[in-house]
Length: 225
Length: 140
Image (cartoon, rainbow over all chains, first blue to last red):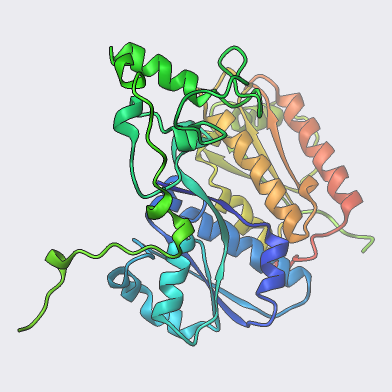
C-alpha cells in the first residue's frame, strides 16, 4: 500500500486561509489502511479545523466526505456535487489521488492534507515500513524477495558494503542490513547460488529519473475502426 | 468569569469508572457537580470523534476513565483509549486548544474515592484554565 502521514493542523489552516467552504475529502483505499486519510481521519481533521477556525474567530465551513478511491475518475464522480460546491478541497489521499482530483476539476483549488511517504507494509501495529521504491524493473526474484534497492540503505545490488555490524546498517542501528536479510533469506530457501553470478548494472531507464512514467496497455484501450 | 463552573464530560467504562462513580455515590462522597457521566461498555469504545465533537460543542473538559492497565475486561480497550487520548491531545493542541482539557485516568470499580478525587482535580484544573473559548451558553 501507499503509506502517508497527516499534516500538522496549523499548516493546514494556513494553507486553507483564503477559502470559506472547505471539503475534507478522504480516500477509502491505502490511506484508510495506514490510518492517515480515511473516513475516521476526515472526521478528526475536520473537527480540528473547525476548532482552530472558531478559536481564531474565522468563519469557515468545513464539510466531510470520503470516497472509495481518489485515484480513479469513476470513484471521484461519487463526490462530484460536494467537490463542485466547495471553494477548495483538502484531499487526504496520496499524491496520486490529490492530482487525480485536480485533473478532474481544473479550476478547483485542491490541497494535500497528508504527506505521502512510500510504498510499504504494516510491519506491526502502528509501524509501517518501506518495501518498494517503484524503480520500474523488479529484481526481487534474484534476491529472495528482499529488495536490495529499497532495503539496502545504499541501494547496492552487487553485495554488501562492509559497513554492517551484527546485521544492522551503519546508517542507523535501527535499520536492518538489507544484504544480511538477502543472504539469510536465500540461505533459508536454499538458493545462495543466485549470489554467485555478478549482478548486471542496474537499468535505471525504467525509474523515475527519466521523468514522469506511463504504462500503456493497447489491449486495454477501446478503439473504433 | 468569576461564577464560571466548568462543564466536564466523563467517558466512563462500565466495568470500572462507572461502578466507581456509583460507589462514590453510595459512599456519600462529595465531589463537584460539574461532571456529566457517559457510560460506555469499555474505554476501547471511545472514538476520537466523541472527544473532538465534545470540544467542538464547547465542553470545557473531557475525562476518559478506564480500568487499571492490565485489568481491561476486553484485554486492551483501555490501552487503545490511552493512545487515542494522546492523539486527541496532540491534535487539539495543534488546533490551539489546551491539551490539558483532556485527560485519561485508570481506576478500579472499588475506587470510589479515586473517582471523586479525579473529578475534583479536573474541576480545579479547568477552573484554572478558564472556560473553553468554544463554550456555548446552553444548559446541559
